[in-house]
Image (cartoon, rainbow, N blue to C red; front, side, top):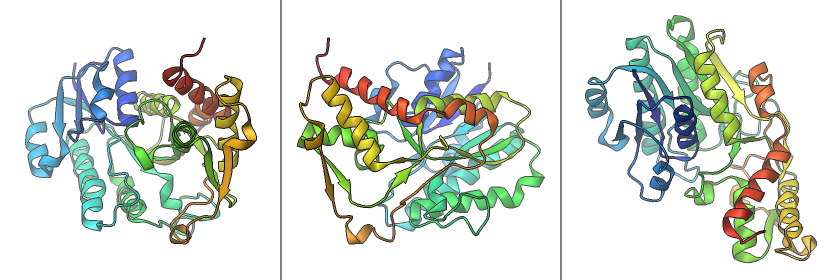
Length: 319
């Protein structure tokens, strides 16, 4: 059996993709990631044949991968630190490495499915695939946008499968190491545990959330489905949920389990810091979803609630 490359396979989404591949009988997996002791916890239940650090650089990676037969590349890994200010660091990780995987996939005539981001839309009123609806507002978003532009400009020349997925706000198990870059459901859950209440910005903010289990399933379905036309697609839930609604779901779960007595005391509104005014996404919504994506990703509020209850079971002695 040939190998499947999963970049970012030690991280949040990547490890969930590897887990699903294992469940489907695919254990010949090459994980490409960095060496991070915190993330290694995600590897303990996974099967794979090699683990390669992307930090050895593009030239070295190409040399190592020449020794493997590869059937597909699932390019999930990225520098997702939205607070990163060094453009060279971000572009090398997210643009130059992405072009390398695209070149390998073309040379070997194998599928490349890669993770783009809804961050490319910024605060544009609609998430259409054109320059009028794309408004990156930080270096991370620009790095994702730049590779999307590279793919779009060359799309008609690809003979292999090349699919970009603009991921919206992913939540679910396996993100424990992400700190400030973790999903809002996990961050609000952590706020209650650490501070006793949730800080919510006093602005109208709504995001399109999608469960990591659904995202991983979509990726593998697209890998196997030969009918999907090459292109870049939104992968979200098509149902934005406000920050206040997320806070209410989290607070309600704590009260329902008898851990906290009063929901009203768990939510406090605070001003949005001025430094975030021009670099903050106030609204995201996936548009024109592929039918297979829409079928898989519905019911995000219910899934957020399920996730919070999973976290409660993990952290509290509940009957």
